[in-house]
Length: 274
Ligand code: IPD
Ligand code: CA
Ligand code: CA
Image (cartoon, rainbow, N blue to C red; front, side, top):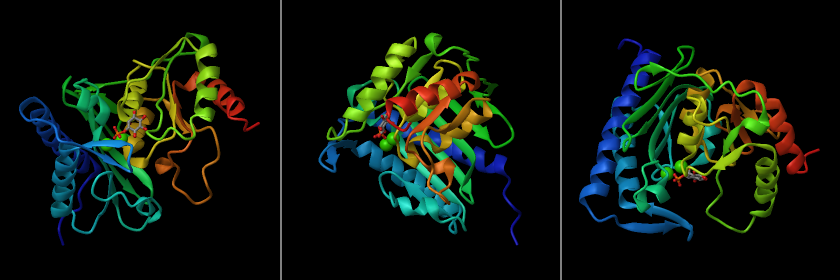
């Protein structure tokens, strides 16, 4: 029998894939003309999203043929998140595709590894500013090898928040209500354009709060990084019974610990949940 692979080995492997994918997407943007297309009529996708996805998922399949993979571009079957028996990799090859296509720097490769629905390892790599956020459960979180921690914010009024909006514009009203409540009760808003980076920025104190409705590949790795940096991660509505909370992306809220409850109350009230 082969030796068991430790979670640190798994995190190292994820980091090496994220670095290589990062080089690939950087090269594609700098040296080639991006070919763009639309998924579901509204979601922008470039040829580099697909190339990076194929590279990462191919390498995982080769090293861990028995593991399952959930990846945004080539294996987006969300029912995988509920299958708890075999380990699951969750991959977003480019988080921040719109930024990528517009030449902005806030673009990330996100790779998470979960066992029984609990994320155990996560890497978020922003190739343009050359930043690697990483965490292994129980071992803390780092940015380029140095330990990170949340901002320690204590008051919503003095807190900077980030959120995002879906590509489809047919149900924006509830999100605008939340935004209205937050912008009146917090310091200000940043719309970074990459959920994975929003959350990593909460992890390292560049932001105090992040909330949104997103897919597992957008947040799985970054959520562990935030938790390991001491931030609080949860939801402002209920997670369905039996669904792994680590992978449930509806009404997700991640913030410095002291403001988590007051912000949850603001978002619940603005959403008409109470
Ligand atoms: C998007 C980004 C964005 C968020 C969207 C996501 P993509 O991911 O994370 O910040 O607001 O909901 O879909 O499409 O760039 O991988
Ligand atoms: Ca994404
Ligand atoms: Ca993506």
